Every structure is written in C-alpha cells, then in structure tokens.
Image (cartoon, rainbow, N blue to C red; front, side, top):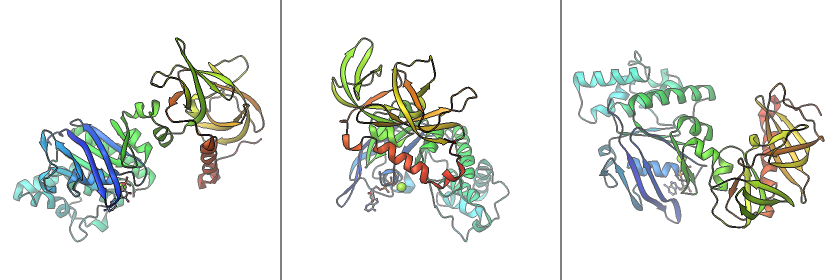
Length: 393
Ligand code: ADP
Ligand code: MG
C-alpha cells in the first residue's frame, strides 16, 4: 500500500442559508498523520469532512491534497476513502462484491481485482469472509468491510466520520486499537471525526477542537489537555475547575492573583494580558488534599460536601472557605496511603503554582460554581451512579 499525502485546508467556509456551519477553518495535516476533529454536535465536523470528500462545495476557501488543489474536483477524482458511522454496505452484495465495487469503478478487473480485494480483506482480518452477506456479519465486521472498501483503492487520505459510534464500548475500544495499528502500518493520512474526547485523546497525533463552526485549538492530545487555550477547550476535554480571579501583579516568581481575598500564585507562562479579572483553571487531579505537615504553593481551607467513589479515584466536592463560597472538584487517586475524607470534614487542599492555567475571558459572577454544580448533578443522576458506592459519611 502506498503511504498518505498531506492535506491542507485553507480558510474553509460553508454557509447554509443563514447558518455559518463552518467558518474560516485552516488546518495543515502531514502525510501519514492521524488527525481528529473533536467537538460537540453541530460544531461543523461533518460539514468540513464533506467538503474535503467533495460531497459539499465550500462557500469559500481551498483544499489541497499534496500540492494539488482539489476544491473543484469531483469525489472520485480526489483519491480519498470515506467511512461513515452508518455507511450502509450494499445489502444484496457479498463482502467480496462490496469491497470490489470501489475497484471496479476505477476500471480494475480480473486477477488484479481479486488480488486487491483479498489483500485488503486480510488487512482488516476478514480473509475467508468473501462469500458472506452483510446481514451475516456482526456490527464490528460490517464496519471492517466498510473500512476495507475505503482502503482497497489505496487512497492517499482516509476520512472517517464517527466510524465507531454505533458499536458498543468494548468493541469500540478494540476497533480503536485496530484502526490505529492499521493506520500506522499503512502510513495513511487519516482525518477522524468524533465527539468522544477519550477516543480523540487515545487515537490522534493531533486534535482539532471545533466549536460553532470554528477551530478553537489545534494540538497534540497532551497540549490540548495540559494547556487548553480557551474556556471551551478546558471544559470540553477533561474536567476543569474554573475560579474567578483577579490578576494583580507579574513578578519574577510568577503571577500573583487574588481568589476570594486569598493570594494565589501561578507560574503559567502562556498568558498575555497584564492585570485585571481572569479565570483560573485547574484540573481536579491537580488539586491535592493536604494532610498534616504537607504544603502546596497555593492552599485553601474547605469543607467536604460530597464524596463519590470512582474506582481509580475518589472525587470530592469541596466548598472553599472564602466569600462568596466557591466549590471545587478534587480527584484523589486511591493509594493505600491516601487519606479518605468524609462529608462535613474540614480539609486543607492545595495545588502547585505550575498547575493552574489562566484563561482569557472575564470572570463571570453568574456562572460562579454553576459549572461545577452541573457536573456534580450529572454525576449523581447518571445510571452509573448506581454502581458507585458513595463512601459512608
Ligand atoms: P457536526 O458534524 O459537528 O455535528 P455538522 O457539520 O453536521 O456538525 O453541522 C454544522 C451546522 O450546520 C449545524 O448547525 C447544522 O444544523 C448545519 N447544517 C449541516 N448540514 C446542513 C444542511 N445540509 N443544510 C442546512 N444546515 C446544515
Ligand atoms: Mg456530524
């Protein structure tokens, strides 16, 4: 199989009537790279993919595969393979015929056709299934046939739109690994669309975070998680605490902030603004419950409000002793030696100056604590909560 080619989207826009579905999206994807478009429903992921595939025409902007501009080319001349979530196989055609179809369309026949189909079915581990009909296959096998159909003509780019969304969790995770393995061995360029942050984090070389038709941030999974640049990214990927803060001063030791009358220090470098109201973002696992004698750069007194056992961590909802009161979520790993707190217990929690991020955007009084509150309500109202033991108080 030939390797992939680079793909470049330049200032792509798509307008449907009054709806700006995609707005000014520019992304450069390297040959052989696995890039995910991640965002909530309606953020423009599918529309972007459809324009790359050639099923939709951009209102503005350009698409390049390698050095070739393909914006005006019909679908079959772009050399792109496409896999959709519910990409129905032809129900009346066998596995062989389904996969052979894409090659026949390109004028391949005879022994070359048979060899191409056999090789691709072996790749997706469906050798021997040639004679089966789609209804005689499991969901995972059907999706692998769809993948084989997209791979068989050796496309330089493969587009996948939520290809694993219809599969149950275990099969989905298995297919994630298989897809990754296949992509690495073929060195194909893959653009993968998902609304599942876990899927994007585990599979991608880089992630493009989309929101309301625009790119919020592009980066490696680690960059996106560790250094989210906007409040949207920080709340969409992973869990975050947001605290209203006031940036008072920049010193050699870092930024000095005020949170509810307490001085807080941050060594976060990626913040341009001088002084004024800001949002302080801190991940629940970066907040440490402090036991006697232990210290952190930033410390708060608080009271435990809720406790949820989550297997690998225990989540605490802590009300900070500041005015007006603020709630934070703390995720503490379950070590044998880690303290176990009870509801109503007084605690001291803290974090290191390097672990908090500053986000632009005014501190919003109206949302203070609300996001946390909603996250906790959701946690307690999911069906999974029945399987979580609430620690005895
Ligand atoms: P996603 O795949 O991220 O869920 P979509 O790309 O499907 O998002 O949709 C982005 C926006 O464009 C949505 O507001 C959607 O309603 C709108 N949209 C998508 N396709 C069409 C269409 N064919 N006609 C009108 N509006 C559309
Ligand atoms: Mg979609």
